[in-house]
Image 1: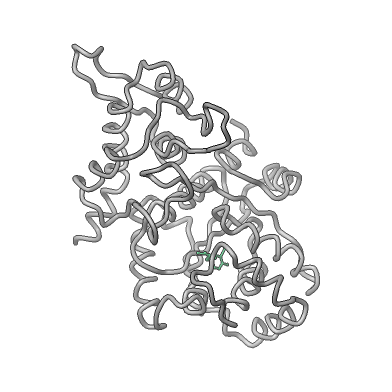
Image 2: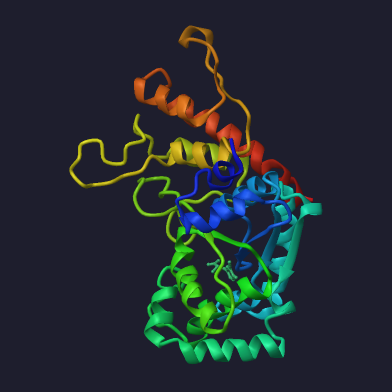
Length: 328
Ligand code: IYR
């Protein structure tokens, strides 16, 4: 795999491809970042972008994780004190999940976002941005119907972070794309350079395969889950024997979340997946890549129940170091 392929593996979108190709030509010493609002415990949503960061480290990138305490505050996630405590715990959880401590810089937003220069730049960005533009950028991030002024300032700060953290690449879930588009418009207004963005896919709701997996609305998997809980959740997951979201072509799309978890969470981190089966059902199966597993599910050589139990075991193994650390 060349560097561009490794960097963009499993990405849902790259903005722009050309800018990213330039980066991939010489990835050494380049810096990528993801920001997270400290809240709750690490769950699959965080782990998806963390996996991309781990791949970027393998490709030679340096990585910054922004623990976006000020953003969490602006987005009504609690008091500063609570948010900071959560940030400390999350940092430990990211390391337990596999981010290499020696290659990862953890930064709290409040370390630089309250500086005078940043604040003045923020006001300049506010002056360049209409309320409706800021609101649109926040549509997928802000919860609740009544947007606050703080939530209109939020995307502009996220744009400025790219400049102030001096990163070459911004990484995020697809829900961050509108903020990154706003950043592409705003940074040049302040005479700063535009940087490319890479967006990871959104995993579908586990039970239905429709919409997105979200801790707020449906079933999600976090480091806090016990082995039994993960087994039960995966066991109940929607898993038709296909990866095609619309096999009958009627426009009603349902993703296969079990396959998505294999593709986006397991295979990037695990060399070989072993599906254990009794001899009488054909014995164990081994997969070195996602595509073969998908093909076997489609052909019927791999039964959805077997795919699920192996997935639960893999997720449990990935989460185990974090779980131990939570319980320590
Ligand atoms: N908007 C993100 C959090 C966030 C991301 C980045 I990249 C920042 O520079 C700041 C905040 C979220 O929705 O979690």
